[in-house]
Length: 406
Image: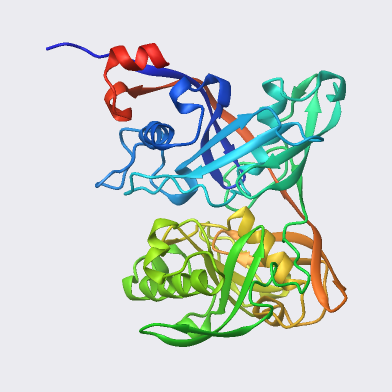
């Protein structure tokens, strides 16, 4: 029996915020995977270990959750005034495709450190001690993210005392600015795709739900917790063990995708599970986070729970946090109502792992709401550096062909 060697690809395994992913430099990928297409997707899906009918990712780098089944490709900037291009892919656990339709706000915090360590940032702009500002072009959605990365003794500072609920250990704080997180149309219709801050959403088989549909950070639909039979303090076991509730939330997500113009038929929602995201919100209440930490109603503005790739997220997606902050800043949205109404520039919400504070600057221009910036703090750390290995047959070619093209 002949032995076929594997493709060896330099890679870095990083935590960013409450997510983990495999980071690649575009130039390190085999030639056949340096351009978008089926060959690239097949390679990266196999890196993660999907599709896995056992749901464990035992034969790959994925962690068998939506937060840990991610790939990132970093390349030289395609847009002037930026340091790097950042392309993000979400890999379903049981699917053989990659969803490139959105961004990962959590992994965005790891892009700056990776860019500095891999020479993408001009050394003249990298201080020996202090803060290095990295301008990132988020290629999936065509937006600018500015990362403020702490430096010490000429290296990215990774350890520190900044605590992030959902991450077990403290680390150095990285501040992220999401510039113009919403695409503003002449009537505000791009930020609120239907032009309304709250509306009635018809969901086949489930009735009508009041919803806020917003495109800020990520396309997102918000509903009231009570409307879907929840209170807003639920943790993962309560939601992820309720198949009927998950089906209802997926139906709401699919209906919102159609209303937002992302797809033309609800049946196509399964082909883009990353976006839009669906979340439910509620006024503040006391609860115990998944770590056992007590979250008091007096310490938060509202409760938020978001679904990621069909399951309740263990904390909060970074892009969803941007959407929460943006919606909270606009009077009349369901998020703003849950937070008590009025105008605000920051919000602290309770999620399954604890709390998170996010700021957003919103203003009204000629009757339309626009948001110029959303700000939040995260942390990041290199977990492993080296190379991943992928069987040649995983990309549909034999060893000799792959070697010639790699």
